[in-house]
Amino acid sequence: MNGFARRGACPALSAPMLTGDGLLVRLNPLSGGLSTEALVGLCEAAARSGNGLMEVTQRGSIQIRGLTSPSACSLAVEVDALGVAVRTGVPVETGPLAGLDPDETADPRPLAETIRIAIETAALSRQLGPKVSVIVDGGGRVSMDGLLADVRLTAVERDARIVWHLAVGGTAATARTVGLFAEADACERTIGILEAIAELGLEGRGRDIMAPRAPTPDPSPQGGEETCGGYPGSSDQASEKNDEASESPSPLWGGARGGGARPSPPKSLLSPGIFPLTDSTLCLGVALPFGSIQAERLAGLAEAATDLGATEIRSAPGRMLLVPGLSAEPAASLQAKAAALGFFTAADDRRLRVAACPGAPACASGRIATRALAETIAARNDDMLDGSFTLHVSGCAKGCAHPGASALTLTGGENGVALVAGGTAGSAPFGYVPERRAAGALDAIASLVAKERASGETAAACLARLGRSRLAQAVSEQAGHREPT
Image (cartoon, rainbow, N blue to C red; front, side, top):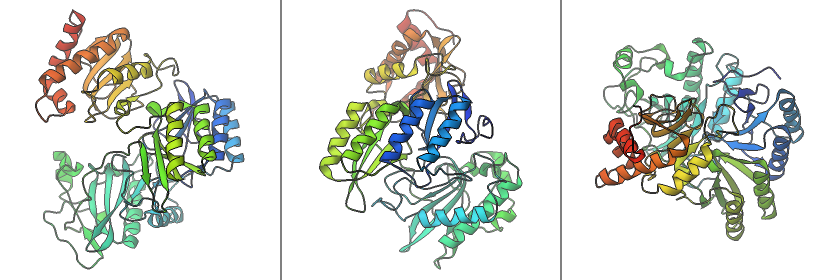
């Protein structure tokens, strides 16, 4: 062990992170998945070493919680004995079904491997901070659009050939476009960007470097590169400061100006279900309930998968697990078994629209029983949970389950449950309610949304239009007295 990771770093096996419920480690299998036997062994090791909870993060990493310093060391030994190779260095991520997805534009694995080798050759891993990452997205059913990356490459078909859309510092919607490149050029440009980030020190990120803006499109028909500048909604048009900075070409971008097409609009995350693969087999996708489940239940899923002929299970973005290599009858049988074990198996399950951390009593930082509250809210508010936003129920102001802003967030704190509109778990609330009345407060808000929602308007848009004052008034009227605002 090299000591504890600081918050904000990646809690790998060698550097677990101290959290409210002990130490946390995060695993990213090098092969993209785990054999079913290895996953059973990992679950057994987690039950012995931690608090018995296994998690899959929004990014698709496997987490083991509730460790102590000695048990974290024991876990590392057991993981090694299981033959589980975990990723180290700068993450170069591809989708969990890369090469198996019939809907993908291109197989991203060759480019990703070339970039990994180039990073090691340039010794960049030691020069970059622990959060710096690269995404190579071949497209397809498993969306990588919502994941933050310092460098992101997305396969695009242009004039019957595959080129790579290169962008810097954000999600698919917010990253700044650099250009469209052939595969060899895409790798070279990626390394150049990472070198520029490394020059900023260990705190440097892709968002800290800027690309020049291109005023008009100028596509290249020859297949070399097509450089791009700003585009509507991108972060280099998000503020005057960035607009001004983008006027002066940086050496990183070679002063090139031109234009090019962004990939198609961002896709939503994969939903649970059964879908086909390129090898004529089927894949079952299931979601962990609010991102975590008891280790013995996950082991039960892996054992059932083995019995039905599956050989591996892959973690995926959106807190999901994928079981490839099934035929129709075993896939249906495993889906039923997963539902019995407590996994979310239906695409229309309202609980998929709620993010909740472990909360109390699992986490010492948690002020409220988040999972029970999330279950209650999901069962009672079908119309408001229309998929236009993720309702966030957070045990404390850190907001681990959903770090970004949400149309509606409930946060446990000293004053009870804070109600936040259009912010993060730590944002200023529009009111407080005791934990016992939190579900009722959501009922009041849902009733207001149902009454005021215009035809064709999403719940998220309606909440934003109503604003803090109207939401606070609805909660106060439901309670019979006015809450602090």
